[in-house]
Length: 75
Length: 565
Image 1 (tube, rainbow over the protein chains, first blue to last red):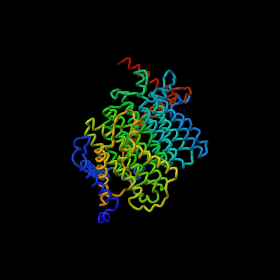
Image 2 (image 1 turned 90 degrees about the vertical axis):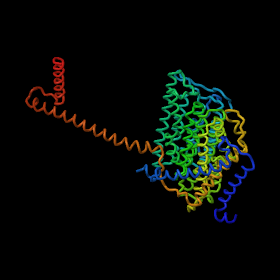
Image 3 (image 1 turned 90 degrees about the horizontal axis):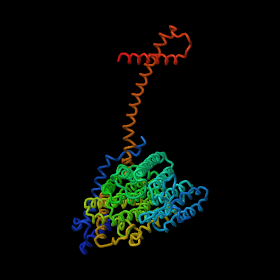
Image 4 (image 1 turned 60 degrees about the vertical axis):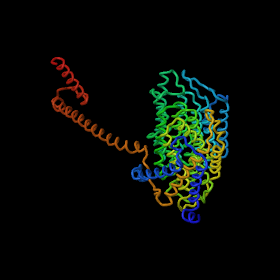
């Protein structure tokens, strides 16, 4: 625990434990989704994590294409 | 008398007196105006007021189950705007905000398209002053583009209304057929104001250029008025599902790379409008309730986020992520309120976004629109990324920017606390909130599956961000301009059109030179041969003489033409 807090900081470690807690919750109760795919174990967790990484990756790759100088329109 | 007075109109008329009042009295006066306007909401549903001008009937005050929630939230937002802007001593923005709020409220109560058109344009002409209030070259140019596009939208609406009148004899504001020309024109008019894909450039261009007070007001009325109009006229139009899904999806990527945090919020606004448009496209009672609930909740939490960033801008003078950071210790209340706004927009349970967004997601699930459902789920993770984390993190935490400042003015704090409280109250007591929605339905957002699923999605998306930041994969924010659809009319069209106009001008000049040369040659010919040889004895002006000569030549030409051809 101490190692985690030293390594990742208090807030990050708290988020990590929250993630684990919500996974355990799913094991305790029965979770179902609006669609059948969502019924897969820990689906929202995987989906949330992957979505965020994909959004980041696409966003970064768009930087070279969409990002221009600050005075681009003033030139 | 007051029963026939449309809500909002009293605010527009009353705004004219604002410049003549001292500061404190002015603030009280504006509150009274809003409360008087809100009194008309107690009158119940039906047509309350009509006028006839030149045999055309204008339904200026009608209300139903759809108008009520929009009217309520517009009045609440107007009150929050007055409180938030109370530190501003000059009257100009207060007049603009009062007129703008009043026009939007009056538009919601319009019963025909011509009345709607009047208030539609009034929202444009009043709100543009909020962009001009920044008093920068960029804001002036942006305001010019903004008003052109808004008026353009009004022209589509007016043309659609006139076509409708010519076909049916009236321009009642009701359901329209997307397959008819008038329906399509009205659809485009609403689509421009709702910032549809490729029509959205004005939103990201103009809102971040407005004053700190102005952006809060702007984020409330224009786009949500368009949402109201779509809900009233195009509920169940399937193309809206596709358009809305695209709207939820693509602004996420722009928001991720944008450096100006107020501009990030405008992309986020665009993304949230997408949720509402999808729900309207579905058109079921649950979905329409979802769209209205989302618009209602969104006005509060997006307003709150803009208030937080406005406070930062007011104190620090910038909203750029690359220049901010570490402001939490100087502006803790602003930071906490902004975090509440961020949690609400991310749709965490017990906050307003959750109880509103759940309705839309359930409606999608019930209709079996799986692909769109997952697009919106993906967009939900994106919302957490850019609005839930990026906004508070880069403004108040991230790195030490070295900026030393103080907490926002008291009036701003009060407005932010009220908005935060409303976000929480709606989230904690959803049943009261659902009662004001257009349709009475049984819906329970807080079941085990909903709550755990949403919490897993959000916490793991947040954990992904933490990993990216902690392992220094997340790139630094840079001062930059992110290209958007406004690039089409700001760069591409001038880039293509100006050289083309130059070419046309060159060709025109050559033709002119040729004509002049020919004319001078003919003139010289006649001058040399006829005038110098004294063909005409009388003194006649040379130009007159030339005309006479040309006329004679023309006669000879016609004569030869008729005889020989």
